[in-house]
Length: 168
Image (cartoon, rainbow, N blue to C red; front, top):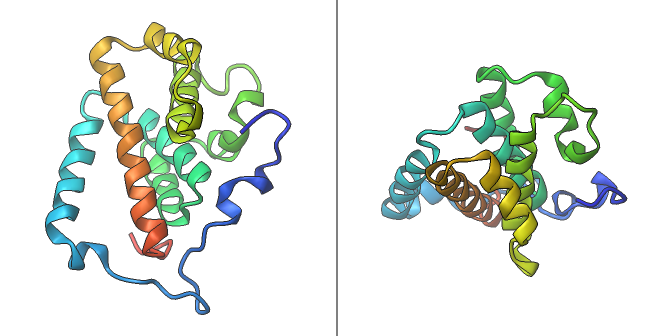
């Protein structure tokens, strides 16, 4: 989200979660169990070696951008369990404008990378990649990229199937 863009204009307002008018479409885990298990394994592998709170921030921000209410709900709850504060969760949609000290430079680098990976249209800029590389060792950076593409895949599965928030 750019600094002048309202959070109300993000894709989150256009995605459709399951509602009485728009029920869930299918149970992905039951209907595609082999693919679902592979996604679970990929998700677990992607997280290895990264701070759980950082992973949750990246997953929440990506879910906001993709309009995935199910993942946003689940990862906000997981973030709180990992010790995340309400202030940091509430400010996440506008993290670039958050006061100094709310997010570390390392977290800001991760969030910027996650946003460019999610909004793949222009690719990942050299500046954003260099910023992330300055804060993450090469192995950590590979893991962070893995977390980004994994949550994007989960978002697409859950948006397509209208997974109901609060059913995790």
